[in-house]
Image (cartoon, rainbow, N blue to C red):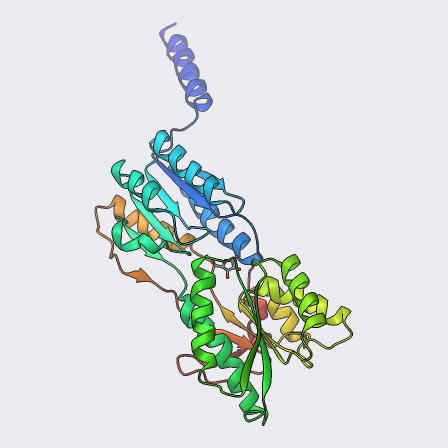
Length: 331
Ligand code: AHR
């Protein structure tokens, strides 16, 4: 009889433990910008996938659909919920002082990723990780300038257009700064157009269509991300021109679709900006949970440059042929 009661008691306890959801020890909230590009999708997958796969961690995710007001609302919701960590990247770089001060007042550790806010020096954060956007922009123009030299066109006057990302995003302001500074080094490259394509394929296509109607001759397109470059390729083909030949195209991000376009001869180069922040977020939170302190220094991942044949020397990096690495690219 005693045995039976014990067995019944055990069964009830087992059922209860199976029914009750395991309480997550750590709630990690992520305010993401939106899903404007292949890069962004890979970034979301890397971070969310890492958190979801980690035992005892719960993800609270918000997609702001490219709107700063949605991000501010999400950050305030995270504070109200009393989450344990906040991951933040800002759609634009200004206007975050107030809400990030509220995060600091709530004493929620703030991890900055990707597009860092301008007020970074006035707020408390535990770690920061993102691309070196100025260097990426410099590499874009330097790649075109060095490539032109390598094919004997270093003295030829060429017309350049710069397709910019979302206005006011640090990825746009940084890359534009790098683009313009590098153009000073190549006097044969003349800037004839500069406009935003909002980091999307559709707008990249529309902007290129209008440039092809209004600018007599375009020799080089610098697109501040690969999605806009791929949209522009569609517009160039529709206009009866050969992308990659009639117009040299340099993108940024190094997503698989850009590697495919390079291998097909329709795009010339792409500057890498890694979206794979999951491992950084995991290491950071594990270290903080173990009582370690993180450095406040912004960490820039090591990034490459990929093109048709490789071997273009940009000072800080030498390009690698996209065909040699395309199979390893997961995004
Ligand atoms: O902030 C990184 C940039 O944002 C990527 O280059 C772009 O593709 C994305 O949308």
